Image (cartoon, rainbow, N blue to C red):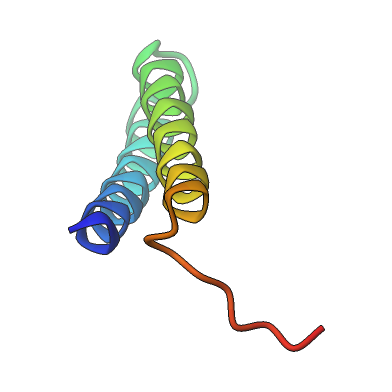
Length: 67
């Protein structure tokens, strides 16, 4: 369940990234929609990082790194 939520958040972040690019091209950088898309993207990224940290803290995510 947690991995699905993380993947969903990453996809939402990617969609926000492309919507910001679309607004930047369409409004030629003069509108406030680009700032709104950036705010949403930062918020989604913060939630994703918090989900990953919670997953490691709770033991639902484990790292198999050899170093």
